[in-house]
Image (cartoon, rainbow, N blue to C red; front, side, top):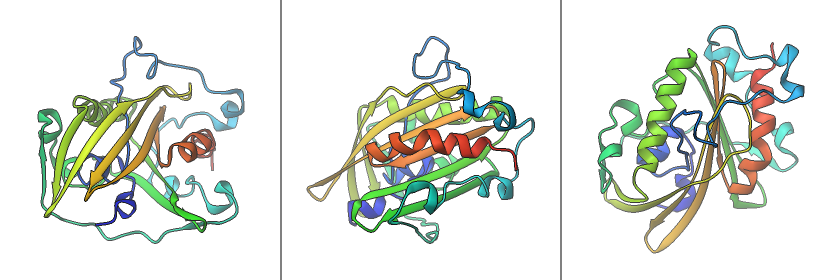
Length: 233
């Protein structure tokens, strides 16, 4: 299994299939990476947070597109869901996750949309986005639970089918966006090769934006992804 093919970049997928990077941050005001903040000026007014959860169809219209990322990016076709046997060792909190979060599916929110892109210039230029919508409380607790489990263990092992993967996690700070935010850099080691992926999640009201990929790309596109996700359509 080539490491870059594992970067499908989904919050839950990265938890077990080691496909992406994610973040920590139980939503607490005392945590500087997850404390509340006001929206930037360009996100006020018509770009205000949704007053009710958005449908999957509405979320899909708010995903980043090739034109948002820049010349050379192509949207990748959606991959079929895999059902490899997955075993997590060395991280009790992560091993206890159930449902899709523990088998490589999406987070347990019914309203969702996702897209992934690759750059013609190389395999290290993949980036993916996921949008979720639900009540603020459900989003906060649901995303925080996954991120807390991921960062509870600096190193753990994942067995996907017959492929052993060592995962190393490091919590990293996040620029002040939205109401809550989490970010994590994960290093995946398999077959003597390693792959580093960053994942950042930002909740604003009833919408969570998740950006995953190379660290520089995540940092470059996170703010525009949040802005587009909040535009009323």
